[in-house]
Length: 228
Ligand code: C5P
Image (cartoon, rainbow, N blue to C red):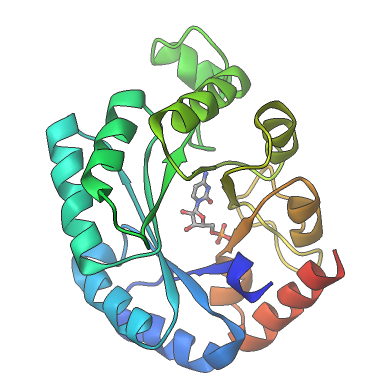
């Protein structure tokens, strides 16, 4: 289960992130570095964690013209990483697949529809389908583009598995154990439910990174995952 729990390092500095990874020690083996840490040493932190034997999810959500996405993905692959997100639009995903080349480590994930968007916002932006239909369409397009998986809500995972089968990664944020606060995650699921719905990896942020004892919080989540 250890390789299926990804702890989000949503912290303001690499010093604070490393204090937490040191506290978690051997309990946590996979970390997520996002846009908050990227400009303040996130890539260097990723390299240090990988040298310690940890896996790193680079949640950079690339979205640009294809040539730029291809070059950015090549640059990121040259520094090393285990998971990288790009927005799940076909030209963006095809460019990322080309840029990754034959790097055996770096797996590519499509971000289907941001969970902060609801149907009304999609209509305002000019989309003619709601979030659920757009998620399903983009999963299909991600698989066609040669992506390794997608990021989705744990509540969407079961339907995605039913429609598209088992041969790809589903990484789900929005995880809340029963003992933790919901924070701003409106559509959260417990670790056990997310796994039962077909998630391969769970991304957990505040229940671990804001806990007074992060290692203990991660241990409790791993126990819940194991029981499922
Ligand atoms: O603290 P919490 O567990 O809510 O953190 C979840 C992490 O997953 C954050 O880094 C957040 O940016 C990310 N995420 C999310 N929902 C998405 C995509 C990413 O919560 N749809």
